Image (cartoon, rainbow, N blue to C red; front, top):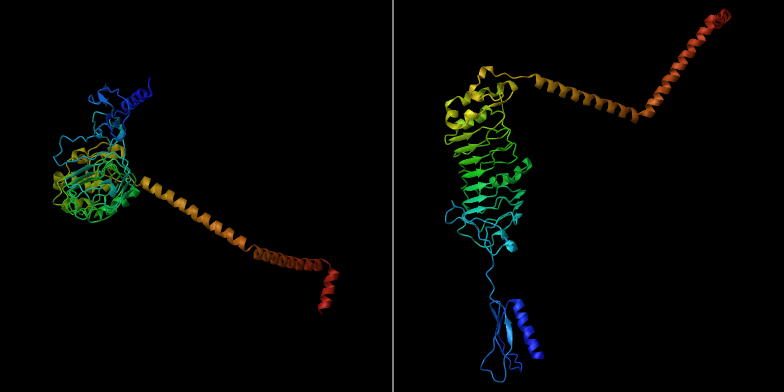
Length: 415
């Protein structure tokens, strides 16, 4: 095979392997007269001119038109509005020829920074970032989302939430932070955001499935328009007086926590909130003793009848004799307190404390003895010498008195 023909064959094979088209390149012209067209795999690779007489032009490989990038299109929820945009992570190289909905299980988001939203999105109203591995929310993250109304950050593990993450003129109304703070020590992370004073339009706050034990005073003071507060399935053991000073609060969900009783101050606070319409308290381990007497009376009153929607489901957990007994069936006069266990615990604590005090006194005494060991040794030697001299005097007098001759001698010597 002539070298020119072999070169053309290799050229055509190269174009076929790269998936490119062969186009005229007048810069290079071989001297061969053999021209033909070859169509292979539906792509034209080499084309010749039928009118060429003495020379032909080489064909160069032209890259085929690039296919549009296969980006996973987000799936719009059925109940979403026309302006709703659901944020998903890119599938990248996992995308298949058939577009499929992106999922946060493919690529998780770890940090939210201003680079997460580099362009201004005026029509973005709903942002769902649940189920990722977000640990940090930096400052000015949502500055390019001026019309953000609903933000879902649930099912993450946020350890840092900057107070300036939201712009001052934000219009956020719904914030879902359920299952985000798994440790009570992370309450300071949330406290700074809620007290920043920028969430002036927030109406719904979901803090369910978190590990909060107690809320500090004034935690929700910066949420002047808050109407729904969801604290379900947490670890709350008490509600301090002044924790919920929001006047517009209409719904409060305290189900499935660790509440054993509600003090009179908290009950009075619930009754004084004229706007409160729904209060849920079921699923808590109520301890039916004398401390629950005021709450039982309150549950049977008109205020609780209007507020507590699930008061029929409130049951006792302790003591064992009243377990599973509805609180509405309890007689307040029959609720008694068993102080035996408490007194036993107090006595045990007192004994332990007394033992520690005695041990400390013993250690101090031994330390003083060790530091003054030389002086104590000298003092003991002096006592020993004094006792010895005294005993020798007694011994000398005893010997004189026992011998009459020595006694007479002693008398004569005295005279």
